[in-house]
Length: 60
Image (cartoon, helix red, strand yellow):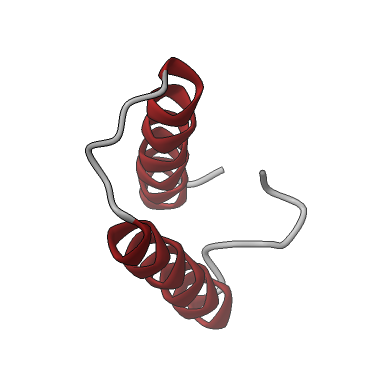
Protein backbone atom coordinates (compact mmCIF):
# COMPACT_ATOMS: atom_id res chain seq x y z
CA UNK A 1 0.00 0.00 0.00
CA UNK A 2 1.46 3.39 -0.94
CA UNK A 3 2.40 5.57 2.02
CA UNK A 4 -0.17 8.27 1.16
CA UNK A 5 -2.98 5.74 1.07
CA UNK A 6 -1.78 4.18 4.32
CA UNK A 7 -1.54 7.60 6.02
CA UNK A 8 -5.06 8.62 4.96
CA UNK A 9 -6.53 5.26 5.96
CA UNK A 10 -4.81 5.37 9.36
CA UNK A 11 -6.13 8.90 9.93
CA UNK A 12 -9.70 7.83 9.18
CA UNK A 13 -9.35 4.75 11.38
CA UNK A 14 -7.95 6.84 14.23
CA UNK A 15 -10.89 9.26 14.10
CA UNK A 16 -13.39 6.39 14.10
CA UNK A 17 -11.57 4.59 16.92
CA UNK A 18 -11.60 7.71 19.08
CA UNK A 19 -15.35 8.14 18.57
CA UNK A 20 -15.99 4.48 19.40
CA UNK A 21 -13.76 4.67 22.48
CA UNK A 22 -15.55 7.78 23.75
CA UNK A 23 -18.94 6.17 23.18
CA UNK A 24 -17.91 3.00 25.05
CA UNK A 25 -16.59 5.07 27.96
CA UNK A 26 -19.85 6.99 28.08
CA UNK A 27 -18.36 10.37 27.29
CA UNK A 28 -20.91 12.92 26.20
CA UNK A 29 -18.57 15.47 24.65
CA UNK A 30 -20.44 15.22 21.38
CA UNK A 31 -24.09 16.02 20.99
CA UNK A 32 -26.17 14.27 18.34
CA UNK A 33 -25.58 16.99 15.74
CA UNK A 34 -21.80 16.82 16.16
CA UNK A 35 -21.87 13.02 15.76
CA UNK A 36 -24.02 13.38 12.64
CA UNK A 37 -21.58 15.94 11.20
CA UNK A 38 -18.61 13.65 11.87
CA UNK A 39 -20.38 10.67 10.30
CA UNK A 40 -21.26 12.74 7.26
CA UNK A 41 -17.70 14.06 6.96
CA UNK A 42 -16.36 10.49 7.18
CA UNK A 43 -18.69 9.35 4.41
CA UNK A 44 -17.70 12.28 2.21
CA UNK A 45 -14.00 11.63 2.85
CA UNK A 46 -14.40 7.96 1.94
CA UNK A 47 -16.25 8.84 -1.27
CA UNK A 48 -13.53 11.31 -2.25
CA UNK A 49 -10.81 8.76 -1.50
CA UNK A 50 -12.69 6.09 -3.43
CA UNK A 51 -12.98 8.42 -6.39
CA UNK A 52 -9.28 9.23 -6.17
CA UNK A 53 -8.45 5.53 -6.06
CA UNK A 54 -6.96 5.76 -2.56
CA UNK A 55 -9.71 3.86 -0.76
CA UNK A 56 -11.47 0.60 -1.42
CA UNK A 57 -14.69 -0.50 0.30
CA UNK A 58 -12.93 -3.60 1.64
CA UNK A 59 -10.74 -1.42 3.90
CA UNK A 60 -12.24 -1.12 7.36
